[in-house]
Image (spheres, one colour):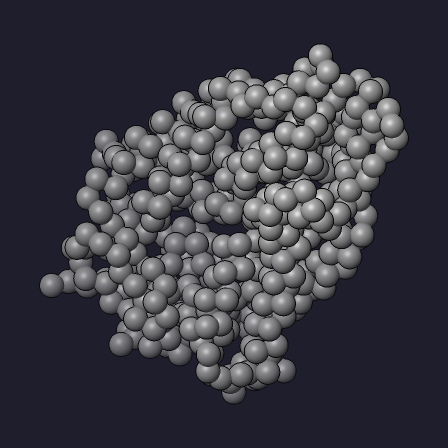
Length: 213
Length: 211
């Protein structure tokens, strides 16, 4: 049986990876970090989940997630109103941070997933696949929709004593969006994609370069 | 078998194994043939950069806790809330769950992150041996948990969006929120700058490379 070599970016250990891959998770023999995971149907699942995520993302941003009533006054909040009010109050740094972490980065990541795994599902390696994959990983910690959800829950508890708070439609699509995105993220591993990119370019992947033993 | 012992490097982006050129002057670098990223045996300046960012986050942490996160303007006057006063408010009114969520996310987690990073930096610089798996787990904890401190920044932004009734009742963000945001972002960058591979390096070698 052939073998690939793979290195662990947590501890620098080089280890052998059986090839062709068996479905499952492969861990670093030294530190136990997950090096590689692969399941059949992984690409199509990620593609499908992110199509759902894109739909839910649009719905979530179209409708208010909370409305608030006090003494005959009413206000509603969507994702963009939070950012707009911060902007109007000249809290630019906060506005930019909230915009990036709850709108731009999550949307970019969903689109990158679609652009990458859509063609891969059909057996084509897209142009700029390497760049897209790199960007996808760089952006990972900066998409904070799940944290925002906890923020919404905390605000509900804070405001409940001041007036009447009514959860909007988009709160439910938002909850679904978080579940779908977390599921897609748990399936994702860049290494099978890197190997596809290698195969498309006609490189034999991960043989040890040079004559090292 | 470690990559560094054989003149090999691990691409930080795609984990391709790369051979370094044998004779180079200055810093050892190679380009990953697969994804084009720069590959170094260890992240250059990892320890210095992490220290700098950790110290910066400690500096930001002080005003983040002392200055108010938000100002609530009502016809009865203006009330300013810091993080701690929010926690105390929740604890007094019986919302223990929310109170502890805010306490953990906003006060405990940043401190924990800073302490873990300082411990890891010292352990690597002093070349402490042992506890490899524990230290690795601590590092992964800082990476995992850092984002959750953003909760309070989001709470402020949601409150501003919802409580906006002309001159009657308004909520404005305080300077504390800005510093708090900086603490979160800077500690996240600090954790990214650190190189976990240094944990596994044998003590002597670490001393030689970072005198």
